[in-house]
Length: 276
Ligand SMILES: [Zn+2]
Image 1 (cartoon, rainbow, N blue to C red):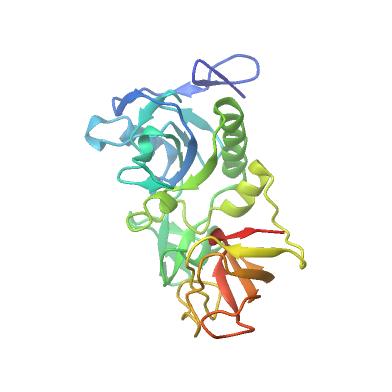
Image 2 (tube, rainbow, N blue to C red):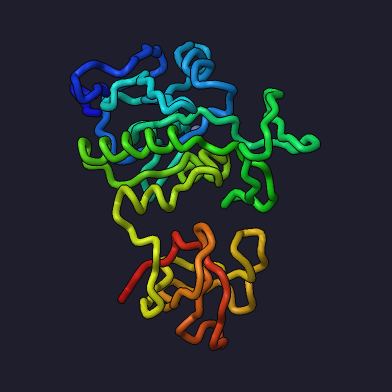
């Protein structure tokens, strides 16, 4: 695929399908990709809704479960996908990001052997992952993305990063963590970013990390686990990594912290960085 005048085209020069929406505003220079799920039954339903002025919402593209991409807003034009949001001091990510909607039912409730969405559709257990959202504490069911859909999103993200020099790929749940849960735990954000930015997903034992902010160290891999005695760790506390689970890292604290030595527990991997 390629981008010509801010629209997606196939390698042979033919355009991807484009469905106009009135839900857009001025020009922008994108710096990020923001991933979303549609929380709906199909890509077509999402496209119909986002193309309707009553929705007061839109995205640059919608990716179906078959991997088919439909564009709705030019990549240099503001789409309305992020809402109240902020990331590293930037407020209102609509003005700074390309929004990608992935057709997905979102969080699901158990119903006997099956799972059911908020709109009443049932899903078999092989279409669902049970997980605790990184911003929540309760286990829930989450509709899985399809491999075709994830590969399409990966290809498109790589192209956008190259074409616009984007800085990062984020989730709506990263930039609006108190309001939003999409794309949620079923989206493989860590490996996605590792593919796109070459960030290491295998970490060697000898490497020393440090905390980038005051950071809770917990008894398990999730925010539902209690902080350990000695928590929170101050910024710039040195750590070594023992194990990984999702975005969580089991660490050994190398410094004496709050009067305690040999502290060992789990921290969120986003708030540590490699120092050697
Ligand atoms: Zn969203």
